[in-house]
Amino acid sequence: MAKQKYYVVWEGRKPGIYTSWAECQKQMKGYKQAKFKSYMIRKEAEKAFEEGWKKNWGSGGNTAAVSSKRSMNNASTSASTEKIDYDSISVDVGTRGNPGPIEYQAVDTRTGEVVFSYGPIKKGTNNLGEFLAIVHALAYLQKQGSNKTIYTDSVNAMKWVREKKVSTTLKRDASTEEVWNLVDRALHWLHTHTYENKIKKWDTKKWGEIKADYGRK
Image (cartoon, rainbow, N blue to C red; front, side, top):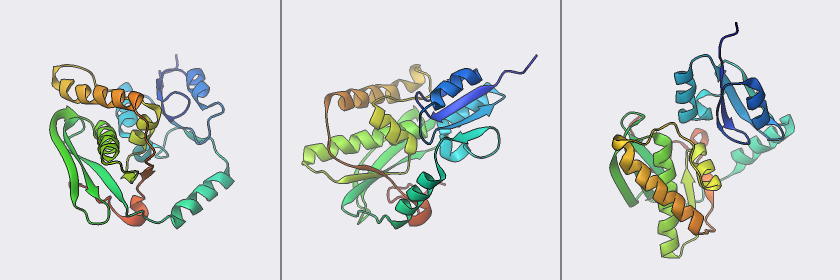
């Protein structure tokens, strides 16, 4: 009898963890630059899904990226020529364990001056903290009447903001009530507001750590 496999889909029609190859394939069909990986242990799959594809995708196992070589080269060229927009704010999360206590802040990308900060929150995850930081930044800038760009180093958080939904394995219980209340409020804000601010991925490899980094690595 074949052993059960767990398929983590980070980038696809519906990100999540699937227990059959057929269901996993459905998420890949017609989706450019899809990313998935199979695991033999459920907990490992859940951890990998929470951590995101950048830390896990491509490091062994079954992986796939549905994209043409040309598009990948074009994306690489675009990223290498892009310059920092200093008329912006940058956000990041500080964690002590994942899950664990989290806090986040936004700083002026040019000066490093703290624009706002929040926390600590009793228990959350890195990705949820990044998500909250981006939405907080959007609400803050809207109150200022500013269309400044927001930088983040979390692809997952950017996706969650864009799709107006989060995908996390963090359970709702007494220990996570605080972070889930904040997430619910953030989702409500996204569903009831519009914004023109660009949310961009900080190029850590090229530019170093994001300006809002807590320096805890």
